Image (tube, rainbow, N blue to C red):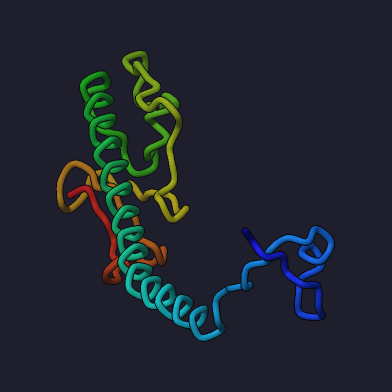
Length: 157
């Protein structure tokens, strides 16, 4: 047979009203909570930098993939028109027919228009280039020529 808790000043109100047997209230101490917070902080400090470094690598990968897509579209343009667009015509020649293309233009050669690089800067197109028939460049995260790491230029050649 269970003993009923005797109402007193330390007994919770619900126990006094219902005459139930009240278990000892338990919870976490401040020290235990602080230990958990420190462990979570250490895990975040370890995982966070690795996660954000991968984010920067993915932007570089996206820029390289977009440049490759431009190269394929420019090759299709060349097959139709007979030459690559010059620097003044630029990548816009893939969406709208330039005057030099005449009736041979069979575009648009890109499905969704000309995207900006992953950092929001326009791609730079130069033709002819010292490295080949054309060169497509993304100036990286900083939008300035040169740089290193994520700020480095990404080119087609």
